[in-house]
Length: 176
Image 1 (cartoon, rainbow, N blue to C red):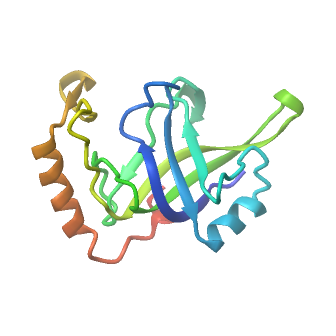
Image 2 (image 1 turned 180 degrees about the vertical axis):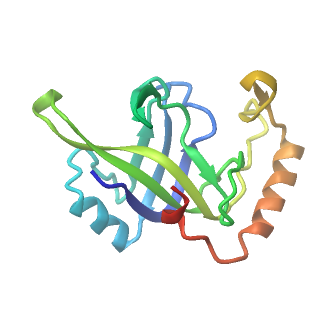
């Protein structure tokens, strides 16, 4: 099945580190009309919107085929609007385009679902961490060990990303 692309407003983005409660990467998107049509055309039966919002997920330990080999899915790729990979924390209200890979499944009566593959941040609304919340990991240090990014670092990174989002987004489909 061919990948689909859905653009819309983002909320509850957990694409840099897995959700602590469920253990998967996720982002909720309120898609534009074209995105809703893309989901419908792909016959994705497992995606049910709640008040128009779709939750897209990726299990980090799920096995996927890549370049003829089976390997863990890991984290989805995140790109800024220039096409550069980024570790920015995506705040609610950001405009994103998500790349989804539809796949068929046979359990529970069968159907079609979609795995979150990548996120293009077209317009960043910086994530603001509440004062009582612990820092979220958003960068990796040596040997792939997550390094916490604190509020001042998040703010500087978010400001740089906000400046970068003032130009037109790249052709997301061509990046893969």
